[in-house]
Image 1 (cartoon, rainbow over the protein chains, first blue to last red):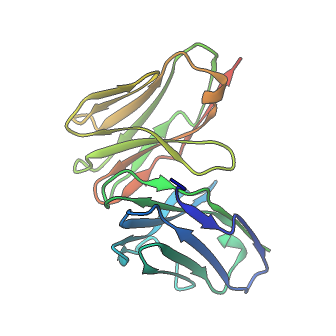
Image 2: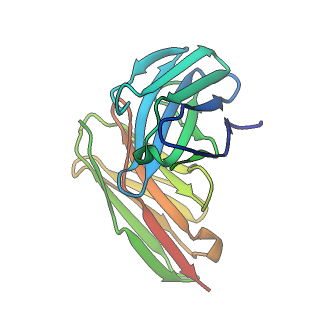
Length: 113
Length: 109
């Protein structure tokens, strides 16, 4: 099993630029989660999809953040425009159901200059 | 909403000793409590979990205990090894997974 795949692993961009993070969940999993990890705030849930439908996006910081899941094997998290305070590690996780074990990807380390 | 407090934030033990990390939660409706280990540069990896219908679960050197009345749960690692050094996160789920702030465990050889 390949596990959750995220790309890119590292991203450095300038303030104001658009950033797109990508995630491929484990095959057969129907729930997908996007998290952000920072030293100050720890691990925060940004948004959660079930069967490709957004269920809870209450953790999305503001309108600059958007997430999509066009099919069961692909999701994107987009930040437009990016700001230095968005610098963090972004994790994608997937599970067989919303309340089942979540398996995390390796993360994307984002640095906004 | 759910709030999870984790202690201590750092823990240093000698190889072979035991390590205990404790978490409390606020939402009595929470019924799933996983523990994750995160190594440097990697994503969190599940090491053990427990559901509210049991009080204790063990997997080799790792055990988790749950006290639903007091709303706290703990991770116990026995016979620690240097490769156990990592950041450990507890979490509680009542509707979504809420993580503790993490414990940085250092096992000195």
